[in-house]
Image (tube, rainbow, N blue to C red; front, side):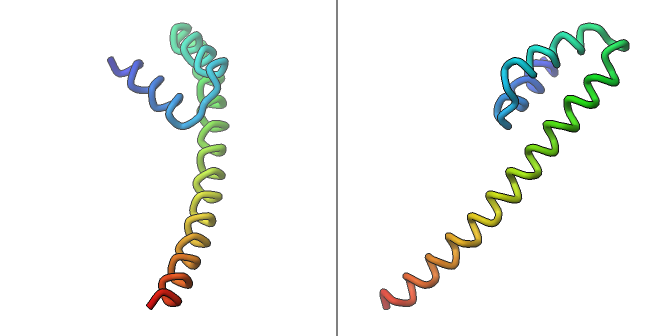
Length: 74
């Protein structure tokens, strides 16, 4: 069950199916696949961090526009 949850979270966070397939293959080759697993997860984590930064910036802009338009509506 744990592996399925991990795979679902990887997909939910935008990991490509090809990379999920590689992840699954590497998990099955334990412990030989650990260095590659680590690299794959670190790369994916960096993509998520970058996306989170983009979303945070976009949300800040949207919040400013909401405040601006809300102040004009009253």
